[in-house]
Image 1 (cartoon, rainbow, N blue to C red):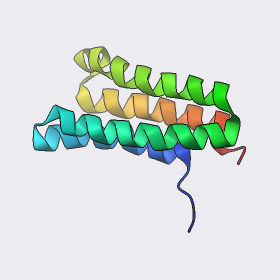
Image 2 (cartoon, rainbow, N blue to C red):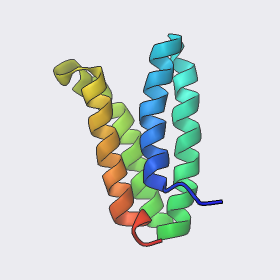
Image 3 (tube, rainbow, N blue to C red):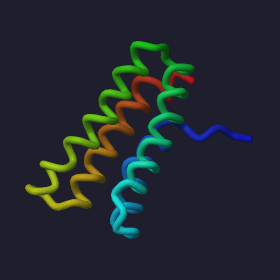
Length: 100
């Protein structure tokens, strides 16, 4: 079975976490989606690019999630979520996925 690139896992976690929280009106459920995808992505980052890069990408993932909240006040919720997800996805591809 083909492995899903870590960039796609990370993007899906950010977008899917927000979409889940919004659709269910249960923020903790969105957090479960975000967290589960983050764990899978971090494991793939570590395998593909090593511990330091995995730590940096995990920090970007968490910072993207946190940063989307104040950004949403300026540009709207979906644009903020999609923007940070794209940034994390691009970083993942550049630093880890294209190597493997």
